[in-house]
Image (cartoon, rainbow, N blue to C red; front, side, top):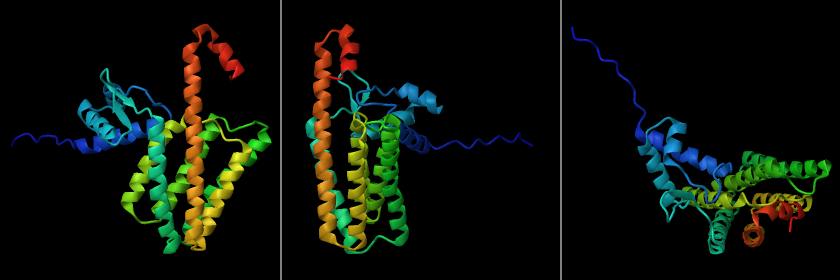
Length: 261
């Protein structure tokens, strides 16, 4: 009788590629890979304990989707935005999200369970605001700001999902993920800003629940247009600060930071 060969269940390369794809995405969302950071195929392969081929394929997919970009000097970097990129992404998001939410309102696609989940996300913003006021700090710190961004992302993702349009859902979420890279540069919201966002979110849920399509469209459009203005102002401020840093001697950087010019 011949010796039985031990059968080893190999993990399909497609599964490893998907795991790598998700892993790199999460590192970007968590801020571990900031805009302009090099993404090492070898390092990711070591971290995941896999060969480099599926990692290369995952990186290629992320390049095609715009999260990563080829470096002129070779290699791959987390994408860096221009002002025009931010305008394009914001306009695309507004067009798709406005349509999706008007559909949710028009056809009454929000169920009681959905309303409850949305309300919890709305209330989470108020909790952040109240906590900030009690702390006496002028704005959310980095950790709290990341929490806010996660809550805000979940709120809009759930609303989009209610439209039952898979393609719009993916494009909007991918667009918001791209914006998330830039959001790493954002300063923390103050109490007034959190109150304003809380009220906008609450109003949006109320409009959709009433199936008031016109009010839904007006509310989400105003919110997203204001968000676009804020992102552009932050981009311009970041560029100004970067320009100043490049123009001063290295030994003066500590003074510059302390003065917060």
